[in-house]
Length: 392
Image (cartoon, rainbow, N blue to C red; front, top):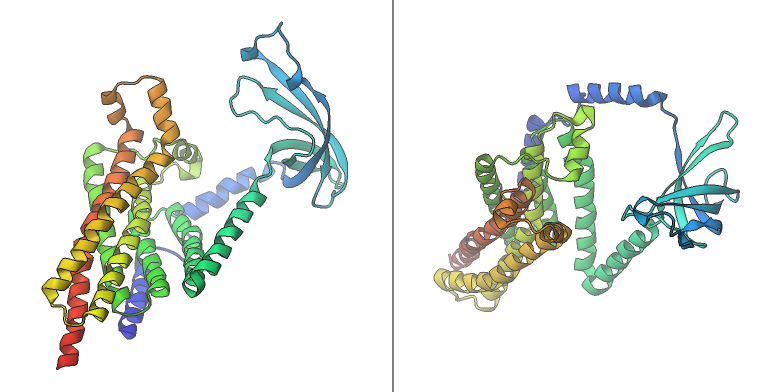
């Protein structure tokens, strides 16, 4: 079994080299180099951290009845102390211009920490400072560290394996998925390839290289393929553009990325979004059926299938609901916006942005639901075959 899985992993990796130009320079890479060379004349800047020592001028606390709030601009003078870099410890005063009509406005107070963009002259002296945003990364790092500690403390050995699988998934997405898509490869093929590799490594780490792992892996891949086919089939009829979100439109404005397959990128995101839920279901079913077979070794093939389907049905309702709620939660501001503007239902359901989100949730749920009987059948066949061999 271990040899079979190792051969499968190596085969997938070797096969991927013939599909994707991972190595070597593509035409898009050459265009990208030329694009960035044209930007080389722009002044380079560094991002520095600073702490607000005091606020000598703060017009945000003034009430100006002579100027309507909708057209009002307020000013803050911030005395800052640089916290890192070659200018650490130096103090400067910067201006913070605030458009009061802007819902996202940065108003600071003494003690806040901020990020600034800084440029230097030929002598290394600061000649430009511009406020970028608040410092939030330390809280993000704290949350990540807390998750890792809890996984290791509560999960023990399996928790550490979960951490390793998370790290591997992050590396694959950043170093393989994103570069391959930006090189102009098919986003759908890339996402399927990354999903398969991620599934193999994650299941091998968490479940192990055994029949349980093989059953969960085959069920996961089957569910992903079903979700992918569902997305491609429906997408061809609905003519999704992939440019409904602001992020996609911002990327499309970059000249060298204007010709990317944005429709395919949308489909790739749907496939990746369904991976976690499908893998969760298949691992749960595979492990449950394995334990049943270990405790009741005399279970027949039919009885094992029936028990596996009962477990799958219980999981099906909660996981489908979880998947729908996850997509709904990520789109709650969008739903509030459309409700606030009192748009008709027929207008909403036909919008590219709304219909693509609905298909995203439905495709993942369909792949999840159909992965259940597939995993049950595979597990029943593999686990029942073990007893036959032992009897022989």
